Structure formats: C-alpha cells, structure tokens
Image 1: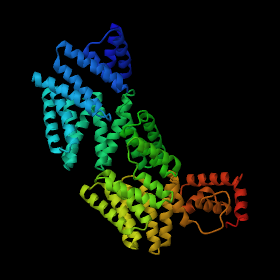
Image 2: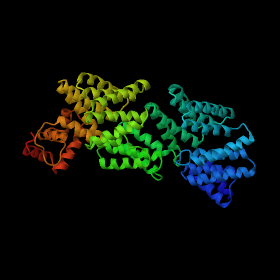
Image 3: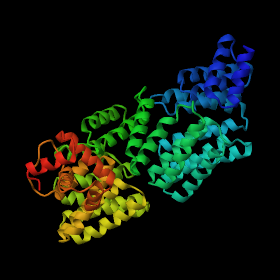
Image 4: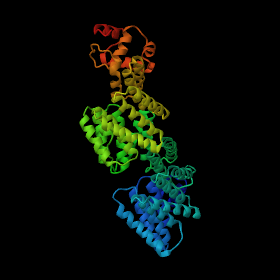
Amino acid sequence: MIDLLTHGRDAYIRQAWSDAFTELSAADRAEALDPEDLDCLATAAYLVGDDAASADARTRAYQAFLQRGAPVRAAGSAIWLAFVLVEKRNREAEIAGWLARARRLLDEHAEDCVELGFLMCLGAWQQVGKGDLQGAHVAFAKAASMGERFGNADLTSLARHGAGRALLRLDHTAEGLACLDEAMVAVTAGEVGPIVAGVIYCSVISACHDIFDLGRAQEWTTALEGWCGAHPDIVPFRGPCLIRRSELLQLHGAWEQAGDEARRACERLAAPQDGPDAGSAFYQQAELFRLRGEFEQADEAYTKASRAGRRPQPGLALLRLAQGDTASADAAIRSALLEVRPGRLRASLLSAAVEIMLAGNDLPAARLAAEEIAQLAHSVGASLLRAVAAHAGGAVALASGDAEAAAGLLREAWREWRELNAPYEVARVRALIGVAYAALGDAEGARMEFDAALEVFEHLGAAPDAARVAAPLTPETPQPSGGLTGREVEVLRHIATGKTNRVIAGALAISEKTVARHVSNIFTKLDLPSRAAATAYAYEHKLL
C-alpha cells in the first residue's frame, strides 16, 4: 500500500493522471486514503473521465476532513465537488446542496481563506445565470483580489476570467478581453491547475466565438490543442477543443481535417449524448455533410444534435433548401429567428434567412434580415460580421435588380472573406459577382468569376455549389450517358481536341490536379480505357 501511495503521489505531481488514478485507486482499495490523498484521487479521476469515482473520492474527502476537525478543508472539498458538477445537466439541486454545506462551514468558522474566494466565484456564476451581470462582475473582482492576497493562481485566474465574461456580456468588450487575455497568460504559463486550466481554455475560446473574434479564437484554440497534447490522458476538455478546431478548419477550407476532428468529437462526447457539447459536435458534423452534398448523413447528424439538446438551425433549414423544400426551410428559419436573441447564433440565422427568403421570392423579408445583420456588424465591428453583412446586402441588391450596387457590396464581402482566409465563402461571393457581371453585360467577367468559384467548390468537395455554378458554364448540348457533370463534359470536349491536362487547365483556368481528377471521373463513369476512347465517345455523342 505504501508503494502504491508513493507511486500515486509521484504520478500526481508529474501530472501523469492515468497513472495517478490507477495507483491511488489501488492504494485506496488496500487501505482508506487520507483526505488529502482522496482529493488528489478525485482530481485524477475527473481528468481521466471517471466522474463517478471522482465524486465518490471527493465526498469521502469531505467527510474525512470533518472527522479530523478541519471544517475549512472540508468546505474546500465540497466547493470542488460543486465546481465539477456545474457542467452536468439536471444537477442543480445537488450543486446547491454542496454549496450550502460549504457556506455553512465557512460562516460558522469565520475564517478569511481562499475557500471563501472560490465560493464567491461559484456564487457569481449563479448571478450570471440570473442575469445580474453587474453584481457578478463585482463578486468576481473581489474573488480575484482574494486570490492575489493568498497567492492562489487558480482562484485569481478563474475569477479574472469570470470578470472578463461578465464584462463582455455588459458590452465592455475591450475591458473584458483584457481580463480574458490575462487569465489565459496564466494558463499558458502553467501557473494554474489542470481543472481550472481546462475550464478557462474552453470558456475563453467560446467567448471569442460569441463576439466573432476569430483571430483570438484561432490563437487560443491552437494553444488548447498544444495543452491537450501535453496532457494526453486528460478527457473532459478534449471534446470542445475538437469542435472549435473543426469549425476553424472548415472556415479555412481544410474540410477533410475538419471532418476528422468533428468525427472524433462525436465519438468522445456521444457516450452520455445528453450535453450541449455532444449536440454541438453532431451539428458540426452535419454541417460538413450538408456542404458536401451528403444529405442523408447530414439529416441523421442534425437529428442527433437535436436529441442532445442543440437546436439544429440554421443548418437543417439550409439542408431543406438544398433538397428543394423551400417552404419547410422558410418555416424553420422564421421559427428559429423568433426564439433567438441577438448574438452569434442569430447572426448565422439571419445570414441563412436571407438566402432562404430570396429563394422563396420574399424580397422584403430578406431585406429586413440583411439590414439587421448590417446593424449588428456596425455595433460589433468584427470583420466576420462585416463580411456576412456585405454578402447578404449584395445578394438582396442583386435580387432587387440593382446589379451595380450588388457588385460593389459583393466585392467588399469578397475582400473581407479573403482577409479571413475563408475560401468557401470567397467562392460563394464570386459566384454572385458572376451573376451581377452577367446582368451588367460583362459576359467574360462573369465567366471568369464562375470559373474561379467552381474550381474552389470542386477542390473543397462542395458538390451542390459546384453543380449550381457549373450550369451556366456548360453550353446546351445533348448530354452523354454516364452521368457526367457539366464541367466533366467540358473537359471531355478538350480531351477530344487532343489537349493535354496542362493545356486544359490553362484553358479552363483551373489547376492541373483538378483536370486530372475530372479525367479520372470521366474514364470511370463512361468505362473508357484511354483518351483515344474518350475522343471517340465525344464524336459519337456529338459533343463537339
């Protein structure tokens, strides 16, 4: 038992959490641990994902401290137990009970201690939940001062991060971000414990997404990824990390990697399937399925997201639109807009609403949605919102028949999306610019925009968008059998004139790699062995 305990303590100090949990658990089975070791066992169990063992060890630590006559230490165990229960659903009464125990012990013994600061933090989060943001900020600030006085980095950083979140909700963005950045510096410097580090990482990244600060979200997501890599056996914070990483990879055009991360998040979070993180993981997976045209898989993933408590909008409405069910898409997006307050989710709903309402020929409603996005972009000032607002405004202007105004707004959106390194959104804007140029009589300019958009869609695997953009590029000719796309017909025509892949790439303004993929698809679909056979096929079916 002594060897197991020694090895367990050593593993805990080294932050080898799986080893610490295994060794301390074995020592505890041999002989009941002291309360200090039970607290260590509870922390290790939580970090490796055994919530039941963690709660059991922390409860026993609370009781053992009381038996020893150490009520303040017992209050600390109660506070940590409540702290890790906060992320669980339907545990509010249990959390309240543990906090009441801790508060009673600290009140009875009237000590000025670090435990009072942690209790103050948890109380402040409850104030946030009730909408008392100003009161919560005051409480967080007091807790941070207590952390500094006692030299406790966990308390200081946790409270400062809480104050930052409250300030953001109060629209004091610069002050709030300063608090969050300061808390994150303590985390990345390794000054805080693993539970607090994980909580702050995930919370700060979520806050950055809420205020559309993609630069910070990217920076802190990369830092979180590195932290998780340095602690490979930590479980609780990996799911949110994977979801955020998938979202950023999707934005930057790395869809295959984004899909891998979304799948891993679903696998990690699907076991309970009753938390918001599980719902977000399934929703992100559904989004990637939808964009690639894998509609059946998207439908299934949106359903799983809904079952886990994440409303599947606007993605599900856009899926129905892509499937041709405009009426269902319109009803779903209007219903969602009635329920969601201003913020990140409403911005994405409004963007989808513009697209859906234009498809349903409800120009006044689309214009109102675009105007609301523009107002939000003006008040927040984030580049992401500026891009969304210009994109929506350009689409509405185009539908209104003002191609000149549309071209200007869409070019503005193109610049913003390009600055954000968002290739899919850039391609979507360029497709609309092509429509605007065509309306202005610039056929050559329109074709260049369509070509550029099509190449990106094909590279990403955005099949529905690629098919939509390819349509105006393909002259009306008898279609061959075999289900070739419009672009593949175009490539086949060039093959039949004896052009190499490199020459075809130059003629169509696409990459040689994309041409090679089209050639391979043509040979497979038409069961052709060679370019000569493809040439014969093109002449036989009068494609030239």
